[in-house]
Length: 151
Ligand code: IDP
Image (tube, rainbow, N blue to C red; front, side, top):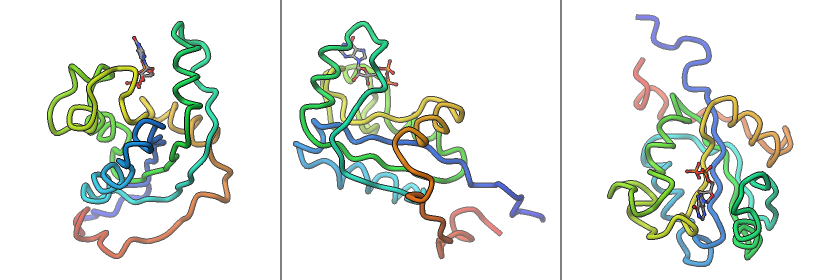
């Protein structure tokens, strides 16, 4: 079996732990979910800065919220990571987010919904470029690769 196809497991996505979650000391909980799933952390930083959502109608309130404190930006890598991450994050509206998802477990209201995650591979590419310099992404081989992906 030629299991290790080139490019397999190299997809990346951007995850933001929003200010509400940083204030509520939920950064570790969010990180742990991605680690336990088997995804690989390739970049992470704490910062205070947000501009991406300015086209949304609820922009002023959203901007105030996103600027209200530090957030954590991360890049996670792995097989189908964009789709899996959206499933882990749950519905936009926390009230609809299923138990077991990040929003379903850790939040109640759409305006304080703990995390952002890229919604497509194309968006992920753009968002990673917005939040990170190329040299901030760390390429490393994880030692459990054969156990999480097969031979
Ligand atoms: P997503 O975060 O699930 O991808 P988007 O529609 O891209 O959802 O919305 C971006 C963020 O804007 C949401 O995560 C949420 O925090 C906020 N937001 C979306 N809809 C509302 C709303 O109706 N009221 C307040 N905030 C909202």
